Image (tube, rainbow, N blue to C red; front, side):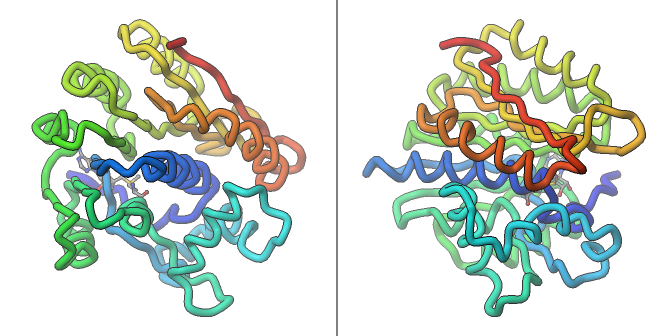
Length: 280
Ligand SMILES: C[S@@+](CC[C@H](N)C(=O)[O-])C[C@H]1O[C@@H](n2cnc3c(N)ncnc32)[C@H](O)[C@@H]1O
């Protein structure tokens, strides 16, 4: 049974990086006139109340979106992200945060499509309500890792697959690699963006080695840390592993990540990694 609820974590430093990478990847797809399809394998409920009990429990957004919200010195990609979040808040008060489905919805053109998977019985109801009556969006109450294979390759032959698991089960790390290989076999030119947390570094090293050994080419990694690696702080860093990234993404992250590490890092402990895991 799934117990993870992203509402406890919405808008934290990990969401900042994840959603900036999502926005920049979608912006790139929008530069061409041809339609694209975005598949979100772990969609969550769609949006979050930052003034609700879940988010207020640990106030993780305080060290994420809230630190960026009122600044006027944001790098361009961060400014684009913050301005998108502002569309969901009608006043200067930060009370709402869109999840990946609503962020993507904002960037869909009439011809583009979004397919959302969510397994949790409560989250799927919230998500379905958010997508209501939008013909461009399909919502599936199903396992995103196995079921999304049926949608690949998308007829548009252009697209992004966001894979944002909660890693509740340790075997998720292995399953995501197996799934990426299967997805890539069906749709080799697609862009795949996999989110990962850093809680115990050895698990990440194993994940990176498995991707390097998978035979998939053109893989980049973007990581943002707020604490040096430690087993005392829970999630100390998180990142995105992107297969077939837009060529624009690495230069953008080169501007964004040092700045975010400085602003969101804990007492000078912030750090970032930009690494080509597998060359083209
Ligand atoms: C990290 S949250 C997603 C957050 C969302 N992508 C966002 O950015 O707002 C992970 C979600 O995946 C769901 N989930 C877990 N395992 C799943 C699976 N195998 N297939 C689909 N959804 C799953 C959880 O219920 C949870 O809502």
